[in-house]
Every structure is written in structure tokens, then in C-alpha cells.
Length: 331
Image 1 (cartoon, rainbow, N blue to C red):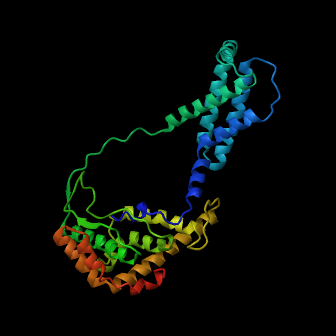
Image 2 (image 1 turned 180 degrees about the vertical axis):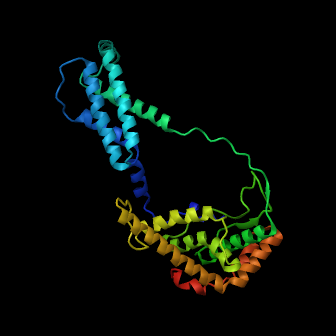
């Protein structure tokens, strides 16, 4: 299937994505808690280093759990973290004198900083243990048995890949190398029935709409020729959904909330994405209605040869009628 969107730097302000990833990481808030604990003045406790350590663990733990809950609410995970910290504090209280002596012997930093630093280390260790406990076991390798496609399936795949291929005519520049192929047998070495292969390329953000059309083109080509959409466009649709979300976040598709917090905000986002998809499908229906004969000819050629090279594809792209989507192409 077409892998264009994975290779393009389109639309989305990358720093927003990085900021969201950092804000969603528990380690970020653990670092914040540590900074607050070390920098803000705290009333001294009269007791052993272990008592100070337990108090600081509670402070760091509450801040860490509370802040991560604001970003990624998860009641079960919060309970697990709190229980883990409680167990740690209970064990520390059992050996208070020995632990105080150990902390004093291992560190030359001022006494007030010893519990704070140790508390951060303890909370980090608990997070690591909790994360490992939550991690799913590694999936067993599944042996894929070779599957031979029927003539009808291969024709559908050829039409699908031909649809992707023709849409590259709408981009400002074509890939420097491009190939399209179909395979009769699907196995571990060849997991796709067909594929458009191209060199990595950069597309201007103004052509983001066209890049999204390329993702939907395979399924809509099937619909234009065969009257139905197959089940082989799962990856294409996932790529389109990711791109459509970025497109909407950039403000190019109508009302859209970057971080919806209510049912109605999520519903508005769904309506915006659905409207964008319907709009693009209508555009592709117009495009393939004007290029149907060329689409079928290209699909038949792919099916007959098994693979078309760059020059052979270029001959077809030169014949594409761009008028049905001319209003979508930036001037």
C-alpha cells in the first residue's frame, strides 16, 4: 500500500507533538516533583533520616501520582502506585535506625538533602517496578502460511494500487524512483498482495490535501471499477486517519479540539473527520470518473507484468486528466 504519509513532513507543528509526549510521560512529573522538593523550603522534621525519607516519599509520590493523573486519568493504575508506595514506606519504617545510619554513611551532601534525593530514587524505582508489572508478555511469533490469491483478488489489488499510483500526478513533483507491483503469493517475505514503492520525498504543506487523497485512492479506485471496497485498505485508512487528525488540528478542516475533554467536543471532532472523509471520497469519485479508462488500463498492465518500473508509470501519469481535481491543486 502507499506509504507516502509516513515519509512526508506535513502540516503538524512538531513541537506540539513533542510537548504532548513529554507532558504525558510520568518521568517528567517525577522530575518536577524532585525539583520542587529540593528547591522549595520545607520545615525540618525532628527525627531520624528515615522519618524524613518517608515524609519526602509521600510528598514526591502524591505530587507524581496527582500530576500524571491530570494528563492520563487511570484509577486502577493510581491505586497500584499508591499501594506500592505504601508498602515501601512500611518496610522502611521497620528498619528505621539501620536505614538512617546507611544514608548518613553513603552521602556527604547536607543532611536536609539526603532524604529528598533518596525519596526521588525510591519513587523512580517503584514506577519502574509498576511499569514492568503492567507490561504485556511478548507476543509469540506467528507462522504465516503462504496464501495464493485468486484471479479476482489479484485484479482487485491491481486496481487498488493503480488508484494510488495515478494520484501522484497531482503532486508538484513526482518521486525520483517509483514502482508498483502485485504478487500472486502472500507469505512471510512478501506480506502484501500489492505495493507502491517510491523514494522518500518532501511535499509542501499546501499539498497536504492531495497527500491525504493518495491514501484513500486505493479503496475508491476499487469502488469506481468494482462497485465495492475490499478489506485490504486497513493500513491506508489508518494512515489517512492520522493525517486527517493533523490536518484538522492545523485548522484546515473546520472545528476541531486538539485535546477534547467532553462528549460533545469528541463528537465535534468525529463530525469534522467524517465530513473531511466524505469530501475527499467525493473528490476521488470525480477524479476516477474522468480517468476510469486509464485506471483500468494501468491495472491490467500491472496485472499482466507483475511490476511496472518508473518509466512505465511515468507514461501513465502523463495521461492523467487533472481537471476533475484542478481546484484542489495549489496554484
